[in-house]
Amino acid sequence: MASNANISLEGIKNENIDLERIPVEEVFEQLKCTREGLTSEEGEQRLQIFGPNKLEEKKAIFFV
Figure 1: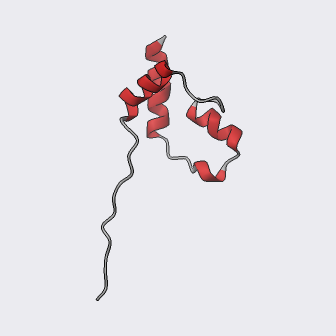
Figure 2: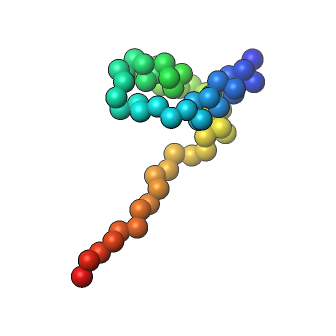
Figure 3: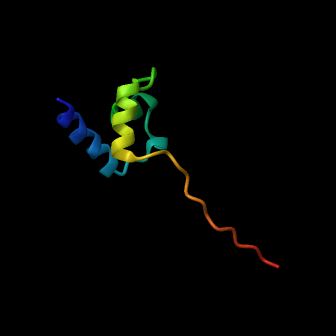
């Protein structure tokens, strides 16, 4: 059963959905989660698939 879950989570990774423009309930549906969040097991599984959350740093351009 875990392999089926991995396949559907891989789909999340590969989709390009503008989550800011759809209703919040649809966001939960798209991300396969709930308002209550993820269990520790689900979090670990997603960490393996998606890696850690991190923001990309953008280099600042300064004009002198």
